[in-house]
Length: 226
Image (cartoon, rainbow, N blue to C red; front, side, top):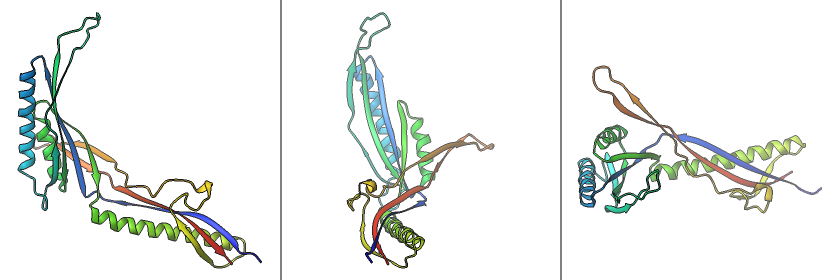
């Protein structure tokens, strides 16, 4: 009797609390005087850098890393609703990326930055540390393989066969089965929730509540059932 071949796809997902956050801030000044706009942008950018420098420590945090670009200056000549081109408007901008390990310090920093003229916080992304990512990815992939074994065993038992023996394991689509086409194991997904909470004894304070990070893995597997 010929061997029965069973091909399945195993998968597993797990959620982990965020360990790092990267905030993206921008300074953007504009006006009708190039020098005045440039000066405002530089002053605001210096204020943002000062807030970062005071809490930057690559090992202990709360800021473990940051970067910024140089001041970009450009101009445009807008049109009014009558089709007339107006005088030039000058712009100056600087962008910042700041990585935090302390989320309470991040909330305080966001509030401070928001109070600086011509400055805004454009978004926050959440992440795991490299060591955690390596560890949890190994665990999730292992569980995806176990899921594939469990599926194959159920299929074999449903047709009156016993044990299954793996003959191939691969990322999705690499076993040559078009139906199994896909992408490599999904990278971590980032979702955030930001809310403002009020302390009735004082002014409202910003609280950042990161959602957990999903780490997922998918594997194609082929078995012989006997």
